[in-house]
Amino acid sequence: MGEAGQSVIEVLMDHRSVRSFTDEAISEDVVRTLVMAGTRASTSSNMQAYAVIAITEADQKSRLASLCSDQKQVHESAAFLVFCADLHKLMLACRMHEVETGAPGEAEALLVAVVDTALVMQNVAVASESLGYGICMIGAIRNQPAAVGEALGLPKHVMAISGMCIGRSAEAGEVKPRLDLDAILHMNRYRSDGELLPLLEAYDDVQSQWYAERDMHPRDPRWTAVMSRRLPGVEKRRSVGTFLRDQGFLSR
Image (tube, rainbow, N blue to C red; front, side, top):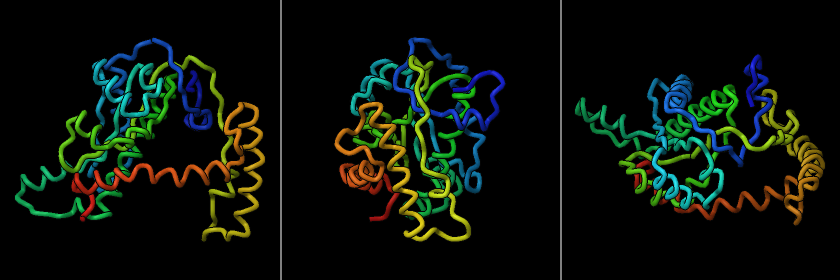
């Protein structure tokens, strides 16, 4: 996490998810500064198709934590923010100018809103870490999207994309090794499977050792094996698609 004199690159390279926080509070002014930094992210055609909901009430925080697999970092965090894809205010703009549109039901509108939201979220994460705070993204906010939407009073054309825990870390934490850059950075065209597979196998060795040293994924610690179990797991969130349609993000 950020220390005095660290460059932006150093802050980025030092990122790790924090799942244990101290009881040090974060002032509302700091939260507002972090979110303001988030809003300076790039946004498609200045649409600013996002909303951020800061959870400050203890009961509301507990309610949302229960909807996010009751993860302890949500309970412990000094600040819990919910980042939403938001086309509602754009629909209000259309209504102000008497424009009828079915645009929110188009896949492109959904992508615009999700990308805008992700960019803001990453800005807030980097801003937080630059001030010495730790963060943890909470994708489990999508476990029960309808219940979360009800809890947050989300209007049509708004959906919670991710939560973010922010606070002072109570643990040292470790930077997890990533895939070799050649498995991510493709030059001019996507690499062939013949080039990509050896890179995945090499990462299997690195990640296996990292997991084994921490007694994680004892079933099979190879990254490809872990991901082969993770990817099918998204099927558990089929309610996300239903909620997107109910919220008007996707045409039926």
